[in-house]
Image (cartoon, rainbow, N blue to C red; front, side, top):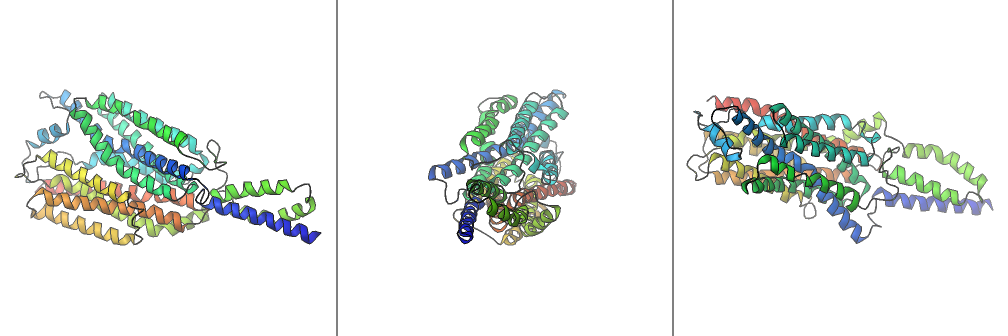
Length: 464
């Protein structure tokens, strides 16, 4: 009799373990085709909406600051991207046609708050339910659009940029962690969406302002973006059963949370028949479940961080080189003999970069690159080449820079999406959620360092 009960108990545990296996990669094997499409589309829209404000603020806040400065001067300056470059550069006497202030200034306001959030929130954000995180991101984005739209002072405009950065930083950290609850396909959707945000944000802002809308009115129309984020998250995603939407995450990952609940459910079904056997089984199982569930300890977090460094360090290097090019060198690569103005050349540089990012972040289904240091090395080669081109001015036309910048975007997007793909595949079930959040610091830290080092580069070249 005891042998029969023992076999039944082992069968129960085997069934629970098989359910755990399904939850380790939630829905990977059991979710339907419609759910996969919904989740892929949901993460694509979340990636687009999360990065949209970050991209737009680099242009919109810049325009509005220009308008505010023109209001205090005797000669009005039209609030447009072209007006900004042409008016300020007309009195410039250096060979680089420098702007008075490096474009890295706006980048710092748009990246430092995000960096602070990612560095700190990784260690406490698990106490905040996902539903509340998304509401905060949406609120921060709405606040940023309203502040910059109605700003009357420089401080108010910069504060709007800060809110956009906060919402984007918390959103990236949270949504990358959220992928641990879904199949790995959603990473492709997220990466493609974040790549599309750059192109969509630039094109939408330019199109609306070119159509005659003022920058403040253009930003007000973009309040549709945070609304789309709400709909994508709460209505489009097909969440796994018992997902802790509004309650604190008491267990570290999908395996510990789902497995513990399924074990309890299955054991309760046999409680009346096997009271004595269940009690002894619980005594044996208790310590094992304590180790498989519950929040990660500091030691476990440090171990997870050490494991992901091989991915995060090359990602940070790629983005450092990338944004040093974008914010420190591209504004100095001006070709006076071209039919395009300086503003038009710079705009094409940024647009082609975003196109490259979109293509490579959408390529995960076609190609996967595990050797991330190779991508970092190639990006450093780009930086050295363009730095030499700025100093020696040996490039004859902007189309050569167009090709290099497109290639630069391809490298950066590939580094981003492959980093998180391989982290999701090579981390344990307990550590995956934390590891995805912690790894999001890599690109942000690289961008912040690039913005800081772009200042002396800009000052040096503009003094020649």
